[in-house]
Every structure is written in C-alpha cells, then in structure tokens.
Image 1: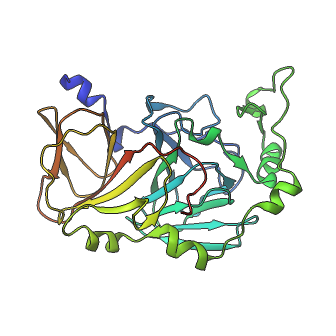
Image 2: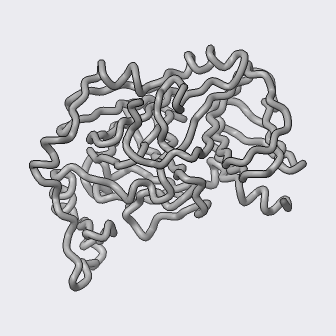
Length: 321
C-alpha cells in the first residue's frame, strides 16, 4: 500500500463535503438546514448532488448528518439497520407513525441501533451545530428510504418531488419527472397499520448504549456494542465494538474482514501496512482485509473509537434471536 493509497482510505472530518438537497424534505421548513454526508458507499441520498467520498462498500455504508439547533430530520423508515452515534451535540430521537410512540435523548458518544420497520426522526436539541455518524446495513443500504406520507405531500408544496425510481426532482430549479416516470406512491393505510409503535420502555433498554457504560466495559478488552452477543443484540451484517484508552492494545493484526475505524474522542495513531497516520474525532478510516494494522492513542487523556466490522450475516430486519 502506497502512502497515497493509504490516504485515500481516510476521510477527514474537515474534508467532508455536505449535500443540502439530499432528501425530499430539503425545502420543508424545520428540515431545510440539514446537511447529509456520504462517507463510504452510496448511502440513501435521493439527490444527484450527493458527493460520495469512498464508493466501495464493505457490506454496509457509513454516513453522517449535520444540523443546526432545532433542525429535524423527517419521519422515515428503513429495511436494514440504521445505527447512529452522536459525535457532537445533543439529539432527540423519536419514532412511531406520527413520531409520538416514544423518544430518547442521546448525548455525545451514545449509540442507537434503531429497529427496522418503524418510522423514526431526529432533531438537534443542543445549542450548537451537531453531528451524528451513521452506519447503514447492506451494500445498497436497504434500497432507499420509506417516507411517512405527509413528508412526501409537504415536500411537494415546497417544490420537491420524489420519483418512483427514488430520484429527487426540484421544480424550483425547473426540473420535472421524465415522461413515463410516476411519483413515488404513498404508503397505503394497510402498510401503515402494520408498522410497529414500540414504547420507549421497549426500545431504549434494548437498542441504546450509553458512552460511559461503554467506557467502563472497555477496560480489559474491546466492548462489544452491536452483535449476536453484544450490548445491543443484533446481526445486521456488521458488528460494532468500542475501544478506549483503557483497552489493552491488541497489537499488529491481519484480519480477513473490513475494519472501519471511527474515533469519538482523543487522537489515535493508526499503523497500516507499516505506515503511521493520526486519526481525530470525526475521521473515518477504512482498513481492507488482509492488511496488517494497529491503533493506539497518540496522546494521554481520554480517547475512544467505534470499530465496525463486516460479517457474513445478511443485511435485513432487526434480529430478535
């Protein structure tokens, strides 16, 4: 691996390129200031304007959402995993047909494996610009987003139309659906009636992990966060674990799966194929299979990172054992 090849596998937080027209609610008041980032894989953006930093997918996608205070992402659903951890700020996640079945507030470092098949949204309730990092299951991220019907109808009033192909058209920019292409149909009442409405008591204990709990559990080995035998039990086609400055070093290792390293706090020296780089919070590093690598905090003090690894499990609905 040449130095240039190594650098091409690292996406720096400061180099992230946002898209402000990624989804159908991009013009809807209350959601019109959000920014979407596609870091690894094509993600689920509906806009041709979306920049993709690393196109090859390891069986899942990595992305991010940045929003100013009081900005929210509209109610939607996914067929595969959608996992968020809070990099910056304070966020409220809510779910249910009208977003009122339950909610939870996440602080920096907390992670949420949102169950598939339920409508969900999120809002920056902090005082500054916030950022959440995302993991989406599957190479094609489940084939796209399922929007609540009112999101699609509201968007049309503000100039955005979603085609049945999943592509977004902006009538304010003179765009129109091509001949023979119909608008995305609204979800029917029969489908909506079957969508779960779990309470916070059903969701939070099973699908949310708190930062300081993960710090405590990473004192003698990496803490398993998402996996068949992890804090959050699931088999979404990837596993997530948590490494901190308290975790004993694993030493140089060569594995047959993809590793995605996502620092949360502190600075980490990454050695890959004999070359060193320093990763900072918000950076993303893709380690391919078969490449010797190691990581260790490069400075004293608090340091933590999430590590995502692909598995042979198929991407699909949340696994319930």
